[in-house]
Length: 363
Image (cartoon, rainbow, N blue to C red; front, side, top):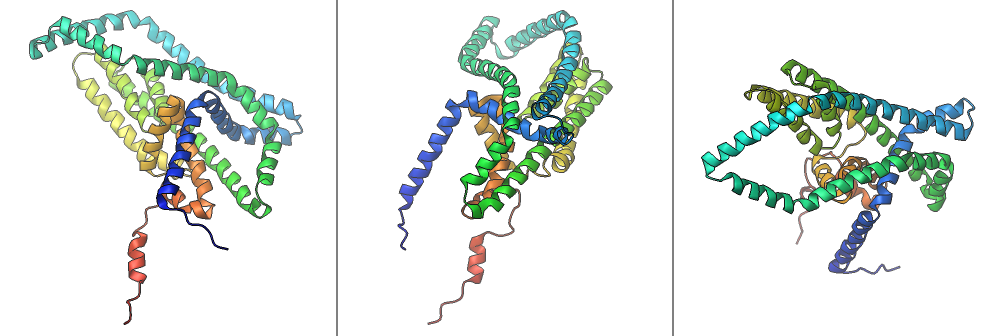
């Protein structure tokens, strides 16, 4: 049977059109897809606890409720710790505000004497910059509201996913041909292991980074070292972007509360060492043991999905790509895409291999 070959420009146009539709759907359905994506990740993470409770002959609904209560208790424990630290921070807010205002006045005077910009001109430039960034501020506020909606919908979605787990799994097995059931089972098993190891590894990494951050800030004498260290560890969970943002908080605090710049330089040096330990020891051995995505793809995907789904998309990007890689690696036609996403770099490209194997033409 002859297979009709379509020209390259037609296939490329079809692929681009399909990708455009997918991106449009991801953007328009973000309010639904983001909570559902988080729910899928957390339900996979909580599945071992749910299975353990069921093995003790606990009824299904009760086991799911106990699993959700465990997750909620852990979340409220973290929030209680952060809120208690933030209350202490609020007590010193007036003094920090006064010190910050003094530094702003000094900065305005230095800019006027150095660059010749009057204070009125500086205020005009700041107002113009603020007006130009209104859309960015609105997008950030929208992301925060989206995050709150995720928190309210998550327990409902997780309950339903765990309750209908067998139904969903049976659907996935039956919707594909019987000869592919082995591949489906392997994909589901590898996906479960990858997501569980990634999230657990991420939590362990955050705990270690929080301890390192807080210890370094305590030694340097930065106020609210524990709070800033924990916030820095939470921000560090955002791939690539969070680590850069996390260093600004202690530097700003040291600038407001201390004279000179020696503490700020010490913070930058300490955080650089911590980031080196994190990127070269913690992440490869704890976080990336099952999620083997190369850095180029990771950065591109984090930025793209972050543009679509905001902060939530940055966190979800790596698990999503990891699942795609698992699927691509087990489908023959998509294996090249799986290799592109992976971190294994070949020693030579296929063009070189083909040239070496090509036999000389005999006249």
